[in-house]
Length: 321
Length: 261
Image 1 (cartoon, rainbow over the protein chains, first blue to last red):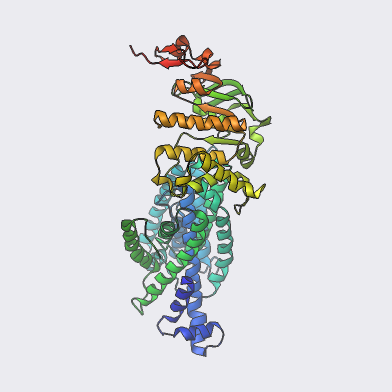
Image 2: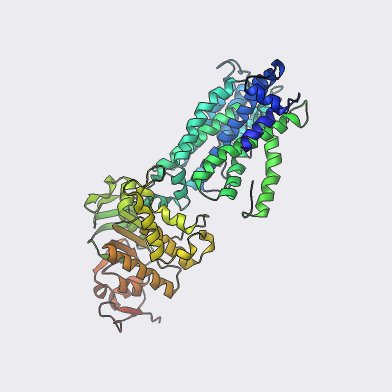
């Protein structure tokens, strides 16, 4: 309900205001030409992309938090964002934006480098067929720091490309058209279904890995499935939108504060929470300083941090959305 | 029934367990005792399938443990670990229901007998006198209650083989006995095969049919409590010289009185 409301409201807000009733008639195929053009071709794809990116990041965050049982876990904790940024910065620095895979060069390279980073992190953390969560987090930090230094190096070497790199890394959903949401939606759907199916196992993980094992969970396999799925979701989100911070960290925590520790609820609700969060952040990003746009990553953190701090202070009880 | 043959476990270049042979009959309670670092916990990890032995085999109910699927094993064997249940925000009832996991499909429905779940979870809550706190979260109950909830979770698992790793640690003497009595009643009721690690030799002597005394990764002595709890044996393993007396009201449970020099 809240998502549907946000969805229509966000469609109506923009450099030219369109009344909500008009938005509905457009969506039902009965609007006038100008409104239809704005809503269907400009706003709708962007809003749908915001929803997809938001849900991907939030649900991936829930997955990482479930497996790593670390309150600081977010979709970027294992270095996926650094890997993707590295790829994107490389492409931009050497002007390869359309050289490799046409208009999809940046997203494809960013996706691949993001996934490769996870493989590297897992390789470092794996000892005799097992991954300890502490080792995993630390190897994520190490790889992140290593790639981070390359990114800084590339940023410092780039003359006029510097703006483009930095803006990419701050995240944005500008000018994406219909292609991106269409590509992303099926993968997102599959990823969410896989994570949903692991909800019960993740509940047992809260008892500790050994207890989960004795209750019949295939611990190493579950860990791998959840980590890889969450990483693929994150990498796909980052590759189309850049690094949007805070969503994957905060949304699952907010949901947990409201509904409790059950991952069978946290995972699906994170999908909605993340959608709404990024949808509104993006609406603000394009509206607040019109006609200039604020990078989306800036808005999500700027709004999210104080809100989260307030909730932490207020305590777990009595929080209702 | 549990049979372990020539079990060895080595971490790096350190031998933790060397050539352990033992068997536990159906309906028997085997206590594992020994000083810190003697390999008790490692033995339990091997017997419960949490770790693989470097050498040797473990059979549970006539089948090699390595040929069980994780879920299948959990339907037969339950483990009550030493660590208390962490503060995870679930209610007492939700935690006990987790014990049903190996019997449920991915939607959380019982695969074998649908109405069995309700009754076994309810029965457990009843038996362990947890009814008044079923909807409390684990954070809000006492240490003794938490340990009963942990026991409730393994009871809901309805195993035939039970392993307990120091179930009475951190409990006062009243709660220690309450815990052991609850385990014993359940064990006798269902004829469970039990392996239990205990630090308290007096409790071990009273509740176990046989004891394994371990030292430096090997079995020092195995036998009935009266054969194991002897002054000279205890003195040589624990490096202290206690007094062993007969229990004033029981015939087969020698008791230890500490007597530091």
